[in-house]
Image 1 (tube, rainbow, N blue to C red):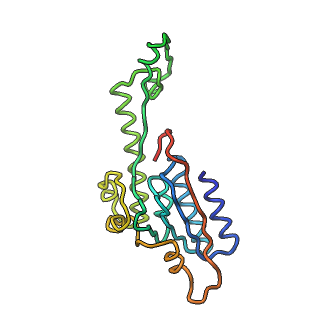
Image 2: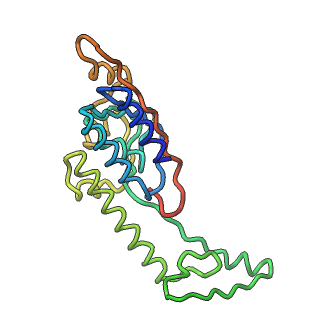
Image 3: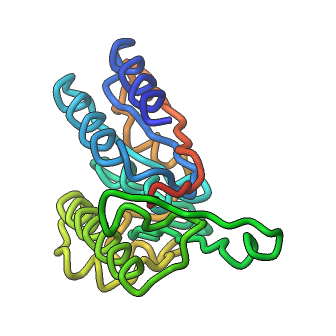
Length: 214
């Protein structure tokens, strides 16, 4: 979870690390807490005078990429995957199932949008529009976050259409800095005469959950 990720980074800094490497293998996670965590781990490293690096060890997509992109440098292996910069949500309509098993629900709400997403209420055009508006709003915030971190424009990030990029394609898309191994990333972090070893904080946000998700 995000609190655990922050705790690991802070533990590395408390141990005197001059470089912290986030080794990430995750398809993403929840919107809630994502940007705060990304900002806080970068701020903590900057305050401690430590360099934050990241490695997409398999994949760093969606919310996991939101964390990875705040690093000063981001590496990906030749088969590593990054991207999926977007938001996904779902509305479930279980009304046909309810009828099939003989259940009838009367949903009482205090507002026109309160029942949006309730599985016992039929999906309406209005509920779809409201959900799409919310998803687009969150996606715009996500794109702006990546744009700031990677020195891109929000429009360029959004134009990627939440696509996935592998290895060198991720470099060309501006989402990572180089293709390499974790050891090659360590090599860039170590001084010519090492005084301390980089401390790796392995992070794995939970897979996407509705609520909505990245």
